[in-house]
Image (tube, rainbow, N blue to C red; front, side, top):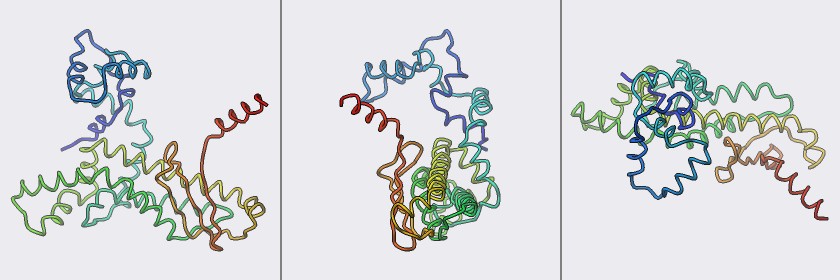
Length: 286
């Protein structure tokens, strides 16, 4: 059985650095790591250590194999405090689980959580309304983003199941999903077995959800100003197109909000600090 402490394997070097202290032993972990084929040169590594303010000894300690005690330390001190883990705990509620006989079984709880959370949030908005098709479309966008984190793991587990059961018939696919991923506890074990994929999926879910919420609440707050400025009157959004190609911090991607009167509003989040500094420079030059 894979226990949730295995999620500690998804911790970053910086997270491990705080709790896995260097010993007086040699830096053998680092030496073995450097022997691997890589396009990164020794000079590049030295620069990286300097940039991240980490010593060779600290890095050596951070990349060591984790025994159960060290996993437990990282789980209790890092994972439990992480926002992505807290979201995972919510996602694992029975109400977000259904059995799907497809590879999407691996992401069903994330999608259902996303749908419920975003739908409830939209109900709190004062000025704008959003069609159900839009919410489903945004959930599909999330699904396309996170299915890639589990697709290879799904294939590996399916092939292992075939060998274990000596079953290569057509029904082995649905049998595998039912037996290996067919309950909340089984799916949770799968998530813990592939901790990096799970961290990526949970983080992406959290970031996209917050990104969409932020866009909607800002539009809701400024709707009257938008009406006056751009001379349109609709308050109902019947389409949102999310761009993956112009993504900023924490998945704050460019969105195109299409209202029921066919008016399109481009929402492009950006930090204004750089713009302000640029204008200050221009003013100074002039």
